[in-house]
Image 1 (cartoon, helix red, strand yellow):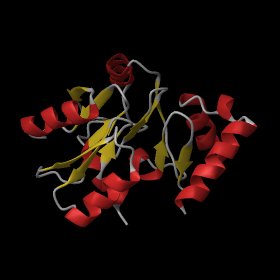
Image 2 (tube, rainbow, N blue to C red; image 1 turned 120 degrees about the vertical axis):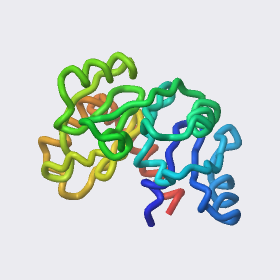
Image 3 (cartoon, rainbow, N blue to C red; image 1 turned 180 degrees about the vertical axis):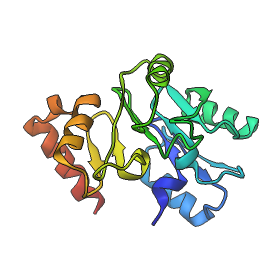
Image 4 (cartoon, rainbow, N blue to C red; image 1 turned 90 degrees about the horizontal axis):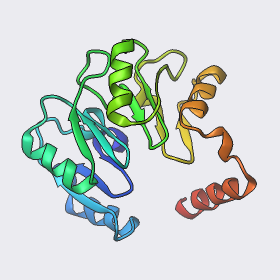
Length: 188
């Protein structure tokens, strides 16, 4: 029910908290390709989706995560890891969504921080909102390189920003839509 805030991952790996049962872990492993590593992380800050945000190359993490957790993140997700804040908050996963195409961050992120994030991530970064003005980007948006899902209260203007920063408007071919429909039907 709260899986999105408890896990973090990319196409190479998935990190889950130690509260994940053996049965849940096995179920997750059965659903994912063998090439995706799944790892439990013993960390005091166990809502991994709030304290970590990543794409396939870079992870931004809460400054207070343990060094061992940082090493696990780098190893399992095969990413370069940076301790960072977004809009002066350590909850980087709550206040940002990043893909290999771009990043959307909390609207109070300073211009200086936007430039620093763009340099670290090597993708365009824009400040914005979801769900009618919410800065809790990670709580209202999930995205990958071909699709994004937002909260139901997200406005047309906010969706336009999401489509633009993640370069989604160019990927609306009928073949892609059919792939999305097929994958949704397969998992239901």
